[in-house]
Image (cartoon, rainbow, N blue to C red; front, side, top):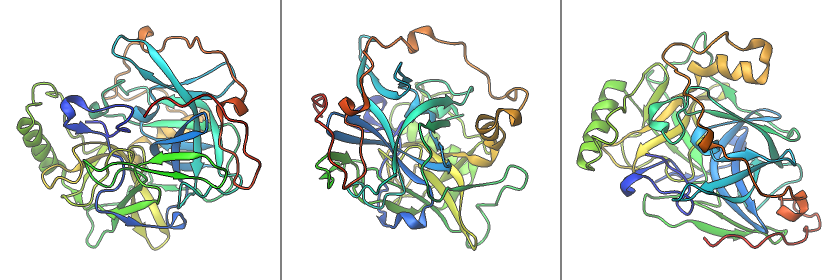
Length: 358
């Protein structure tokens, strides 16, 4: 049910995948998507696009919790990405970097890339289970990134995505089809980069009413033989939005990216790509976290003085799982040794560690 990078994780039974690249989308310009971000893992001189996100302040990125649950802030003060192995051990994949405002992932303007220094998962998120809701995270950048930020839907007067002629779109750098391969490229600084799509994609994804969405997803799970495994899956109209009726959809690599309503004042982010059964299937809408429902939590993270007193009852805080966050035994390395992206045109840093096999 998770749409994560396929070379990193796969969904249960191969049927459930988290959103990645836009299926049946089209090339678009990042200028139309203020604050659009690529969440990346940097391993030596190879950069892997992992998830999407949006810059909602100069030093904060909004994304999905399942995109960030395997990140850890190391003694260096920088976040790294880890992969949990079948035996429970974790393998360090590389530093996490945020690249904002890119139309083409191979073209990296000066000042558009920063490492991550803080990771905040929503307290109601259950690790490994985005289908249970609260699938949101905030990533703080080590230094601000100059440029436009995405405007978020209001908590007090949320927009109606079902209004007549509503133009609702999603965007990302994920795969262009459920079974499509990824793309690779070389930046001007000579780095290898891998993603679902090198060029930012966008596509129209019409909203689906909650009751119809729940029925379609239940039918899809039954067809895949997953109804018992995911018996707790529901659609909460207060915190989730369903969108997409086949054809255009988010896919692996699009998770954490924006769902927006186009308005006369520019795009307004109403959702965050969370999960879906397959990509672009007519009978399986994508599920997005509803931004307006979490504005209080977002505001409280960005400014603790605005934090709500406690999570609402329907967002239970799971007991801490000590085994889920083992301390890293990796030594802290200088950023240069990690191969952190540098602005194009600058001298390339020395080669880092050998990247893991794809």
